[in-house]
Image (cartoon, rainbow, N blue to C red; front, side):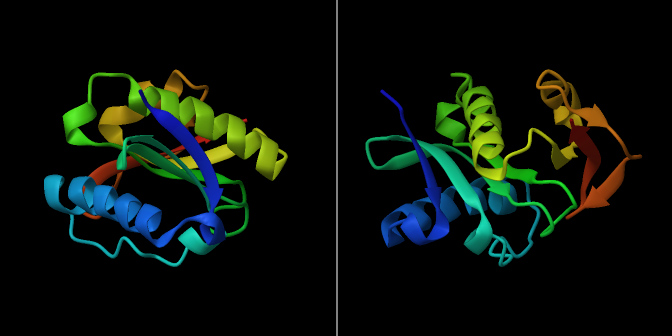
Amino acid sequence: MITWHFKKFEDLTTTELYNIIQLRIEVFVIEQNAPYQDCDGKDFESLHMYGTIGDKVVAYARGIPAGITYDEPCLGRVVTSPEYRGKKYGAHVVMLALEAMKTNFKTSNCRISAQLYLQEFYESYGFVRVSDVYLEDGLPHVEMLRD
């Protein structure tokens, strides 16, 4: 059974933070072969939404307040553990993250830098593509906005 958590950075335990960063690196750096600095300084101000089964983080997303990455709040680092894919945990964490961000940031506006292959996935949550394709960490991305 998955348990969902919503925490500010200062409320994360060191073990929770370690497990979150471990999952992000496993997928974004190792699996996608995109070496980049995952610890970008934005976690301190972000809302962290994640699902656990036992002690394992199986899905995660972070919500960044407006004015840090974009003028609008930003959803990012959306990830599902490879061994738990196909169970809709990624879809669930996005839905819960958007609700939590609306409550905490007092707006439903949200901007994302989405990997191109996920454009239709994010469109199903009301995001609209607002940019041409660009490379970010060697992977094709598009900017998307939700009003």
